[in-house]
Amino acid sequence: MSDCIFCKISQGQFGTSFLYEDEEIVVFRDINPKAKTHLLIVPKKHIDSVMTLEESDELLMGKLVMAGKKVAADLKLDGYKLQIHVGESGGQEVFHVHVHLLSNQG
Ligand code: 5GP
Ligand code: ZN
Image 1 (cartoon, rainbow, N blue to C red):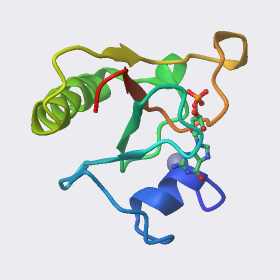
Image 2: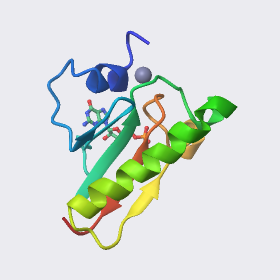
Image 3: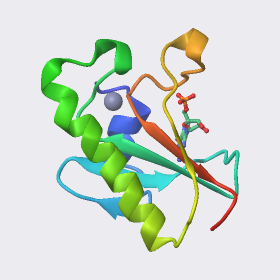
């Protein structure tokens, strides 16, 4: 997806600083934070939305939650929300699947 902003960010094209990175996932701060800590947990693989997930994406989606858990522990957050917006009417603006991590701590 050459015109996808999260593909470009996850490939390092903008020099975004990552709180976490592995072969499959990056975590970075939301540009327009809606909480004191607002992170985006993003797979490097382009998937439009939860609506277009395939069976083979099941493990990857679990890894997004595990990456959020790890970064939250690194930041010493003792509570947070994990949110996924699905589809335009579900509030999704960027059509590259991602999990929001929101906390009033951090
Ligand atoms: P969605 O509503 O699609 O779940 O959330 C997309 C999120 O991505 C929004 O909270 C928005 O602020 C964030 N966002 C959009 N473009 C950029 C960007 O270029 N950089 C970063 N760091 N966040 C972005
Ligand atoms: Zn993408």
